Length: 333
Ligand SMILES: Cc1ncc(COP(=O)(O)O)c(CN[C@H](C(=O)O)[C@H](C)O)c1O
Image (cartoon, rainbow, N blue to C red; front, side, top):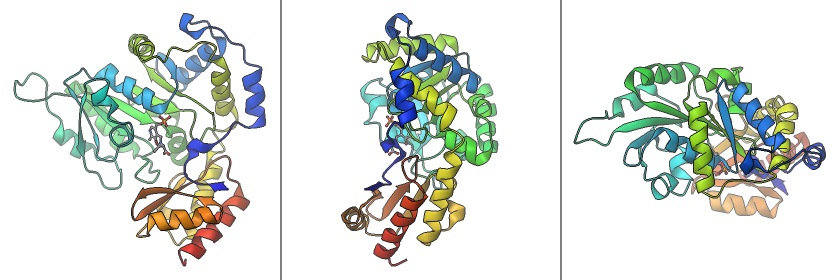
């Protein structure tokens, strides 16, 4: 099977498994796991923040990250297609009592002005106050779009004066950094809290890292424990993340090139492919997914008329070419 459903499907490489097996571990609830500590310190430094916390998923990283900057009964404002309100099972409301309100964007593109226009102030007895804005970079349902740095800078600058926090869903911030040539600390500086995934294109089996101030990460550690996320010898997972940072970050450019090759093969404008995702619209998604599976290719159905193809570490050039041929044949491209 050529699995293009997501970059979440990557499996640890032999080198990563060796690093996992050799990891020095301890009880992380006591703060004694050396690999976890090393990973948290390294990721905090990469993003220019004081501290970081390893969490088992991007969903937990996002949800705790938003809770750090938004009290129950206040709201987080975000894009209508953001992962935090689309795919996280309503956790903001269900777990944290946070209200979310959305603004429709053009293909996931961050429009700072449109969000700013919707923000509601604290202190008005009629209004649910907007405590934070959540941005997503790259944007998943936007087809892996990289957010324009100018928009991120505009939103953050405004948010300092407005007393509104910014949470970054940076599940694929690595892809944005490689595609845009923007360093991670620049992105980190434009968010109060950020959740970044090791388990997507970087190819680690499990885990994300939440970065923020030391005070906020201390609070995040408490929330994680409350949710049952306190981990013991999790250094075997942290070692995978450290290995991924060393060996799988720069190569993301290869996934981006593979996505562009797929786009060309399927008659999708390669200019619309900014990172490792290709979306194909106006197709009968269930039928295409089923027919493709029968021919050894797995794709995601984003909507009844849209499929998503995600390139990643476990799909090489030969597999990309073969998948492109199968899908081009199915789609008469
Ligand atoms: C932008 C963004 N933020 C957060 C997450 C959540 O990460 P996990 O909770 O799955 O680790 C994802 C996962 N995305 C997954 C995928 O793309 O296949 C599915 C849709 O959940 C994501 O795309």
